[in-house]
Length: 93
Image (cartoon, rainbow, N blue to C red; front, top):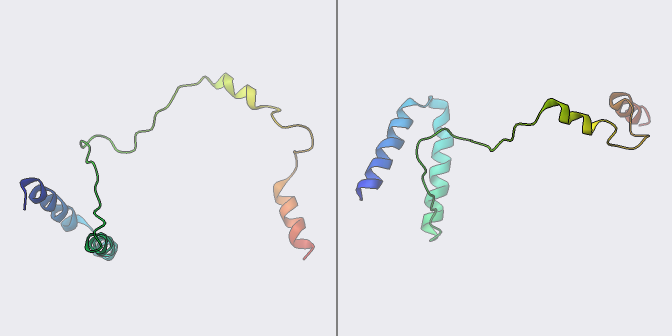
């Protein structure tokens, strides 16, 4: 086993020790899934990025005044009470 693989395995085992017992079944199911893929020759490869902040999404700051463009976006006839409309559908049944 390569040094990299040993490091990854060590990190995985460390995380497993911290998981609550009820989460282990999900981990086992995932590991079995990856194992079955490997048995079929469908190797799962990923690129591991640095341990930075996860889930970074690009955002563009926009002033609140830009919301005015959304006012009256739809033509007449789309306003109404969604709850009342939904209840009316069930009244007909």
